[in-house]
Image (cartoon, rainbow, N blue to C red):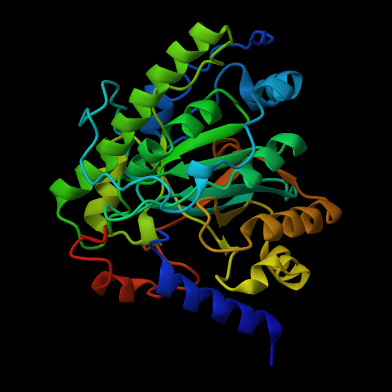
Length: 363
């Protein structure tokens, strides 16, 4: 049997079966508050990416390195466990964010699966989904986040809005470390291939609004305890479709709300015990190419992700790769865009349309 094909088959089987798893004194850091708001309309009209902040991503990394002992999150706690926090199915306290991003040009519609890096440089983006359904709470894998902090490895975290509310204290702490780029993963993991336009808008904006509420609290908290807030961006500017599902209406909705849709070209976990194996780590690394976007989860579903992450990173570092934010990767070449979201091949996630309730949130 071809080992790689077998592992990919196991990965797809898991995805279809459990996709919902669904006082300190810091060095000053240049504000990133304007990072999320596009300011060069002419470039956007030509379909250019949102420009990098003036300070650049390198400044974010240097700030983290200079202050990581103070920024490091606490080890895993009781409320980090799956279902440890009682479920709250209500919408957020505020239904829409005060900051609304300008629409992106129509030429940017579509979901980015990877980037064709201009010079073939060995770079890739590690991304992590943190999500939960309307009907249940999931966990937070603190081991993953603290390990990334210790290793100075940047990552993009796609957070569900309801998940952010469940783990609000953790999210506020993450917000203060610019090693992490926070992105939108909808409110309660709704299926954007089957929802009505009204529900799509709610799923997107509820998450933006919850982020904004926690950002305000994080900044106030930073002032009380005497830490710098590191210029937390006003709202996320990247979005990931739950289950990878999308349609023409949802692609337009995300684009009109000013966010770039980001998918992946490498699914890391397979959902079984093999996640913690060196063989699985090598198999994942074999599928990575310059400009890849890797999909992991940091909500304690499935098991073994932390061990798998360490194996994958070690393999990729030995092969000469370095890790960048999604926003940084988009600036390094030409995004490979699709109008169909999927796990490993087109159509492989459509069976999920009949699962997890009428709109994918478990209701």
